Length: 404
Image 1 (tube, rainbow, N blue to C red):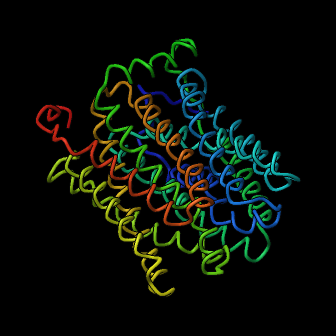
Image 2 (cartoon, rainbow, N blue to C red; image 1 turned 90 degrees about the vertical axis):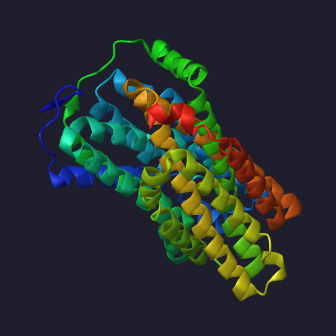
């Protein structure tokens, strides 16, 4: 078996290995989002209210944030191939527990476990960067990130259709089977990785704090993106319940709304070209402003007839998903320039805050939906996005030009 390290990478990666990495990243991160369009029928099936149902995606996102913070640093100390495969097996078991959960208590514990172990995606992306030769690294990582993004966006569509036909538990059984298949493929297809650090686990975690303390631009980027994540998660975690209660639309239609998000977010590579012309700082302002305007527009929904109201939700989802993804691309561009030797840890810090924001959005969105209805959710999303815009509003471009 070939051994990979940062110092020596193969001259070229086989296409089937790149496809395996992209597929694995997409399927693992999709595990976080299958449940979102299913909350309406899931809540009815196990007889829980909207607030309690909102705890399911909340714990999943919180588990993901904890997994990034506590587990991702291990990739520098152990063979990443072994780490990925072990986490894949554990993820499959967590998905099985979700499918078979007899009560809400079991379902909540399983949801937290799904979040913790679905962090495989954040192990696979740096693995792709290590394996790729310098001349193809951008292409390989970009392909893997495309797979990850498609997993996020299409998971809602697939889960809605499967649940409509076979029930919500069937989706998690299918997901478990797919993860088991990729765990075998990853064990057979990945080379072993030499550890790149001899730091103790405690010391690795300490460096995350030092980066947060010493890099103000990291704090700014992570906080702004976390606020956008609150808006993102509040919307998607409550949409299925809103559509069921207000329009009597089932999980298949709820999942299909993810196609609007996919169309918006897949346009986000335009942000890279925009950043080349006007700088990533400017793109973060434009992206967060688009998110604010998209949610403001959706505030008009209660005064519109049903067809126009649903169309407005589709357009709003397209707009805010584009804005959020464009801002994320630009924030990653900014933080990667802060310390090239610590890019994985910089990414871990930012994504920890992002998924804390996701968990908060799920919890607050469900609470507001039960208290003030859909307008409360839209108000939360709008104010969170406005907070991100205000954080990005000061122009720091001249002082950070050297980092672009």
